[in-house]
Length: 339
Image 1 (cartoon, rainbow, N blue to C red):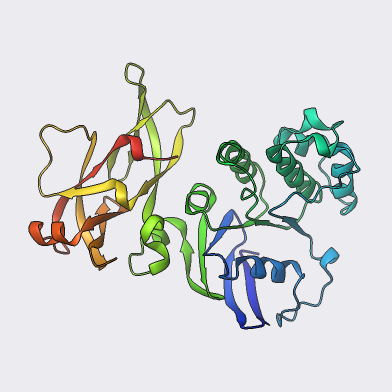
Image 2: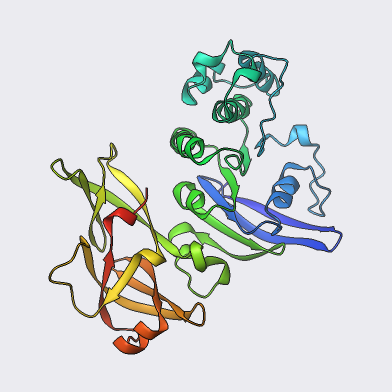
């Protein structure tokens, strides 16, 4: 199966969910939208927890779906080990051991712990390990990091990266945090008022400048880049992508990286600056423009086979007389690039 079919229609009071699409049956599909857009309702329909008109009459326990909720759903009277054993009992045909999944999420040293002694991040890792112990055919994650503070949320992301890399189970990941979506997802579904606004590959969908949901703080792009060298004197890493090279702070222990660049962190110029604190000044071509507010404009630029989105003032647009097709230079401060 190359795709997962999503056909759901559900009315709850004044809200109506209408979804009719299909998504890849591999990798992570991010479902993004504001609160109330229908993200959790969609997951509950997929899991069989809502009586939608999708025609799937299988009971919840026969759907082979793992569900990671916003809040920890562990049994407080059981140890970590016993919680994982409970997950394994839901699928007696599983071939991988509890120890294997516990090691993947680094909760193997917590097996004898009481759930009440776990931190928020530890509890969520145990929840994910318990879901893996079921060996589901699909994993649903409903804002699993939203209950964590910024530091613990940041600490959890590498575990989700590992889950992505080391399992073949498709994941549908719901969040209203654009940085999480950019960090984790391969495919993007944008929901608004119960309907899909757009869906497609993450990189090409993010640089749509015609969608209000991808403006403001959500406007930006993701680049897949390869690390070429490290400058130990200044603690900077140089990454290559199809449009050139980018200097990024710190030393990264990875051959490739996904770099998130927000629209507000890019400026455009007609000529490269001869003396500037900005290390990344790259030639680009304007591919499209759209008014964002009364004072700002979003500009999509192409660099090689890659795209970025810049936010500039309408005054700058007027004074530089920028038009689609113009050659410009995209200026990106190194310290603003995020992994």
